[in-house]
Length: 148
Image (cartoon, rainbow, N blue to C red; front, side, top):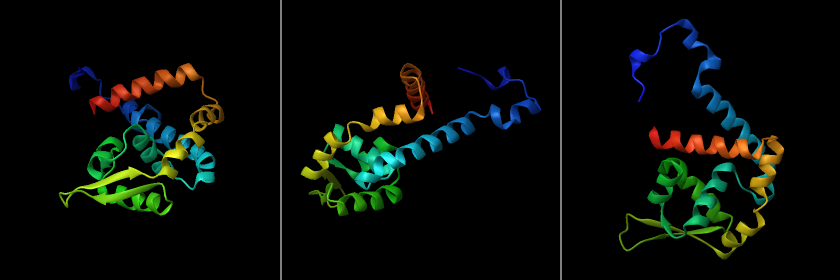
């Protein structure tokens, strides 16, 4: 593990192009922008799409569990789920413990999975990213996510 004393403190460290956060921010923003035309035909935003991706992996989960999986707080997640419910893609139901709200896909939500299978491929092609480089970057980012 790196220790603060291993890093030299210079003004060079404050250059924008040396900031990991800036590279991640710009890359994320630009990738999400590339998703927009791919998701518009389905009435989805990027955040709606990742919520569906999580539900296609594991359906009938609590809002809390879905929020943890997506790294989203309830203030962001609740309006998103209401929108997806209005599109007829999922249902929200209170559990026996009134504090728990369960999210489950409707048939329309389940069917949408097959209709959107092309999106990951189309995104990689539109971003002009080498597939192997994309896989390596994703693996590094997942390692990073586990550490922060």
